[in-house]
Length: 385
Image 1 (cartoon, rainbow, N blue to C red):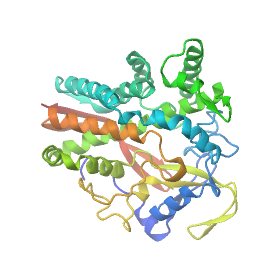
Image 2 (cartoon, rainbow, N blue to C red):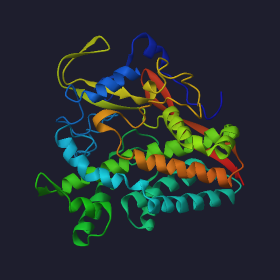
Image 3 (cartoon, rainbow, N blue to C red):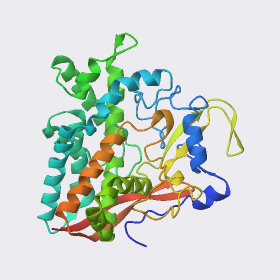
Image 4 (cartoon, rainbow, N blue to C red):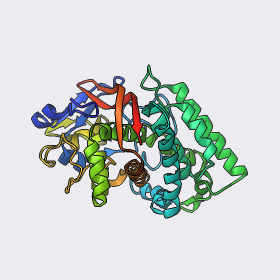
């Protein structure tokens, strides 16, 4: 098997039952595996709730024990969800602007030039994390130098090597955001903190807690997912130079290639919901206040929808993937992620002839019944100009 391959551990359960199960900190989760069920449930926010009384419970693994701040608008349901989303959505569409893209191009070109000058590069920490953190300064409209702090945090703001949920590490993020909010109150600029503090909802200004909720989501939601996407793309192009060459010769397939890589990698495996009333899930009774998860990674490999689902078809024509979620709570950062991946691939095409994988350590996510490779803990490569 290729080092860049991400196998589908859900296939048997998806075909036979349509769901799987896992125990998450003694709070069981029923994992929905079929694209049809995932999309239908994602749209049904009244039965499968993102808000709820317990902050952090919809995340898998649950973050109930490491945070008290509600992530906004992610953990808010309609109709209030729309009020929050209307505030932040224009900001997260800025990656469509030419000046935004030029900044990303400069960041990516610098990192790739530095990689080409070295004999070897560790992609996760020294390439993907660096690009993700520097690109985040563009998204937040904060000084470039702030990326150094974020790089020092490592690849995940809530996790360490030996624990899936690290409360001490999470506190570092919370304290950082509190200080930045206080700074923006005293000296507002044109960054996202200041934008949020100046915004109104239902005739009042956002509270500090609400601003903090948006910022936690922005930091946590777009960190390891973006890092995994970049790292997996590098591994893929290392083993499939013909795909990189094809994109160079057929630039019109670039957008299709981006969507296909995002489908195949599915950087976020799944996201939970809390059941509000007794119901049926995949023809099985499910009690109110229990949890389900919407498994984007499995839905993206559903053989009833995708031809050759476990292959990267670089010019796939029909691609209704759900890597950015579906329905009301689809990912705010999708435009930034797509734009960044487009810049990276375009720059690779112009500067890199080939990539060699020298060493790798897979990152395997343990979902009890399922073990899913989400990317790499380490990936050492050589970039050739």
